[in-house]
Length: 157
Length: 157
Image 1: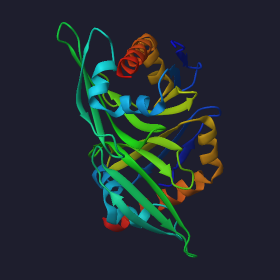
Image 2: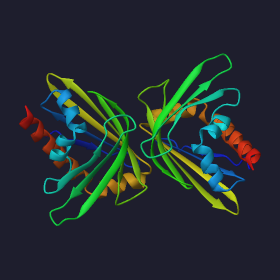
Image 3: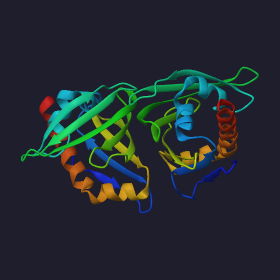
Image 4: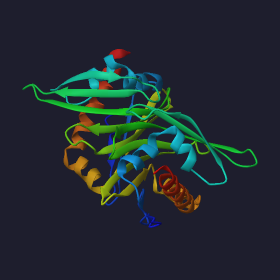
């Protein structure tokens, strides 16, 4: 199921990540908004993910911290614009290492034959911001996170 | 002071509106987050603007309704990602007539010699969404709103 695709056309302000999971969409959706699930799959495998805040409703805030083995911490936060179970979440995203640079992320879940197709589309405030995200190693990071989510879903069944 | 500029380069997901106002930025900023101010300048002149919700803080929600003379209502809503007085507001924006289409708006205020330069940058989920906003008459609507804000600021001094 590791059919991850990352599309970032040159000159655009967008990154679209798609991935399928061998689980019904109710479970995939829940893994995005349940703090106990998020800390098990979000981010890099050798880091600890601390879910500082996760209010999954329109206007709710979220904040996750990645703690590396040597104790470095990286915070990420945003607000939810929309949380519509089990099909769609829209939220803002800001890495606290680059304050003031915000993106808008729309994640949708579609189910067919018990499998779920996830589409995660991010739009950035500028092409430079989008290109910076790509240079940060976002693609391999997303692949690792999505693999971890796949494993989490398999273990939860 | 009607130096409105609307920049929307073809093929991009962005609209940037700039406008200057003959007022210090504290006052311009306040006009964006004060419900009593917003209902006096936001939207078309011949409509009534109802400020249903305006929680100007990270995670706060906003909802404005435009009521036309014949009683038609158009709702708009979103959430605040950042509210940093007096320089910057970042929020989401959705017209309820086209549900599910969201944009991320960043408004900054810079002051020089007692005048304020406003930059309002919107990024859309797609080029088609951005082009739809342009076709909706957004440019003349923004011009009217900005003129009304200018008049409101002049009357408030």
